[in-house]
Image (cartoon, rainbow, N blue to C red; front, side, top):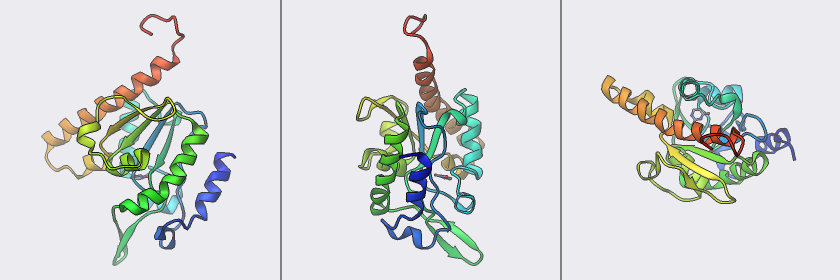
Length: 205
Ligand code: URA
């Protein structure tokens, strides 16, 4: 199975009702064999139209953060816990609606398949939906974030906030503080990725 073939299967998915109103499924994107898999919530309006994950405002912030910690997005497999955009029509606009537990659990099937194909050593879950998608159960971001945890099959896991949380913050002080915390969570992922790139006898390994 290739990632392209998997994307083709995701496109015709009817495992939950979200396919009915979305433009298309948005598969994960990035190299097969990426050491780090970054998981978001679900495609937004722009992602739904373009068919690519994290190309809107939250994606730009994610790109900026990954660049800042020297973990380039191109080296990561970037995906979502839910592959179809869930929204509520409001006039000409489509307002984001959070996927429910049943939708996240139905879509775990695809997340697991992506994980099996890419086989990342570390999965970064951004926000509560991603945590449920990856772990298969609800856990608060605040309790998990900021440390490397063991996932199954020898892989590691780290949780952090979703970048759109940062976009919703109003106060400058809150924004700065939460941005710094987000970067420090991602820095742990970046350090893990760099450590794996070093030869076993390198200093500091
Ligand atoms: N938010 C997400 O969780 N995923 C995207 O692809 C875009 C915004």
